Image (tube, rainbow, N blue to C red; front, side, top):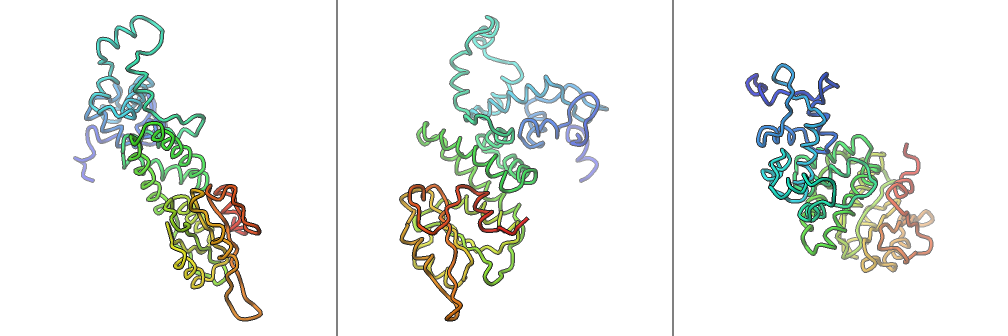
Length: 332
């Protein structure tokens, strides 16, 4: 980048704890947004810090961060950024100023209704709140940054279990109680989680006879994201995986088992309507190889759809970590 492109507002650091305040990178991590978002809010809406080193590098005080935190909360409710910035700077409507001047008491009804538009996350990792805010804002760049950072810091399994799942569940609860209002947020978040998994996962492991794991959703099942996480986690541990995704019809599924000759087959069902006990039993009974040394796959029934539909002799890991342990027992 040219020297001109790194002057003025664009020249701030994300390194080390500086004297006199937090760096933009520190602030972004605390709020769960991308550093570029913080800089944009400074340039476009005047939410920048009062302190700069040498007039160039941003240094954020607790008061500065409080304004940005309010900006995050307001935009997460769907408020336009310009209006959210006006409120975050303290230019509130007259009725809001009057209510605050009256002293402690219940928040005005207008503020309660907006706060109710947020996601109820409960006691979760701080990263969940940042991911939720980015998803509600439909902020693609920030969401990608946060998801990849969570995977890098915690690993695929923990990032999925402790960051992504609680956020997806909160979004699901929200649209269930709000009609179709938040369906776009769930789709948006799921798409970016899928992309982050593909970006973070290592290259596909070469096939090894007798070691391949085949993963597929049952016929009619379209929820592929949990299988994508499992595929990435197994690949990370050096297990060769053949992933067939959503709603694989019966005949192609059986043909894939014969052609792959897998050591194990994971069948995902999100709902009881798509969990087929006869199909799981049929796959478990399949054989291949020369007479006297024929092999059959281990079959794992994965997902909540199998609850209450236990198939005798087949494993049903309760979660991602257990599925990984069952399919990659020798992995570090």
